[in-house]
Length: 305
Ligand SMILES: [Zn+2]
Image (cartoon, rainbow, N blue to C red; front, side, top):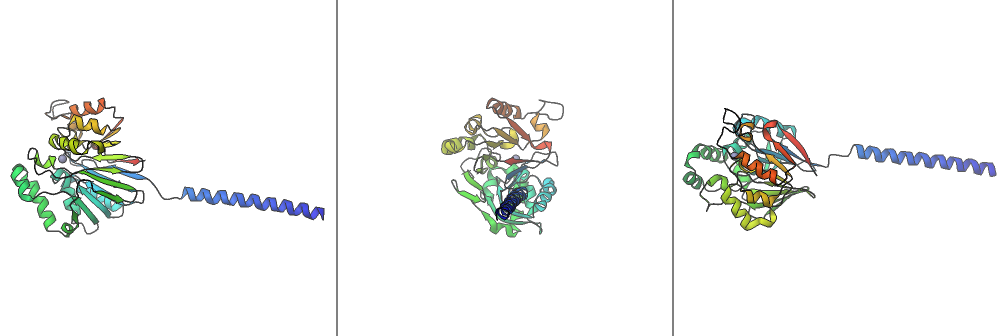
């Protein structure tokens, strides 16, 4: 009787140990094969040598959000990226309709392998663009012709200031839209400005925001501007004001900028150009920005906590 008891106890111990091992194994496998639960930000690279701006954000559940996209010449890079990520774009945010922002977009909307569910853009009347930026007639014509000949028109929604879009783990708040009353540097100053937020991180997209729209943002949304990551306005030169960057106080800066623009090099060496990139660089240095991501250094993807 005593012996039998001993054996049973031994067996029970063994079974318990096996059970514990099994549980450890199952939990281990579950952790190892867990789907990616991270937000990823990709900065596209200028493939033509010309300045451009394009970003993609992948939500923690894998949905794809596009922001601008660059020139027509960058379309191949953008197309490959979208197709590699399933061919489906949940939302496409357009900051403004200059061709270095929407050129690739006008190509993607004609691609039968790509599905775009929503387009968020604050677009003024065609006549307004033609009146205040007659030198960009070609840009204006090619954008309006592309959307007029395409079913994408039905998917374009006009966001309002203060509007918040929730897409998976992200909140996207619109801080600025078109500014028809600002006729100086008209199209850039009508860039849509928005903040993308995860639980822990905020990213501010400025498009090609100029000085006048910077002032308007400071007047109307100053308490909303603070962000961990900023997309530097107008490719890093003659864009947003110093005061705006001070209000943003970013830790990381995304530069949709070519090397020649970064170095202010018009072809005969550093500082030979007329651009104000170095001024913006010095402002961000003063603000102790820890990391700068330069688009010219190739397509880069970073994890957003
Ligand atoms: Zn631009």
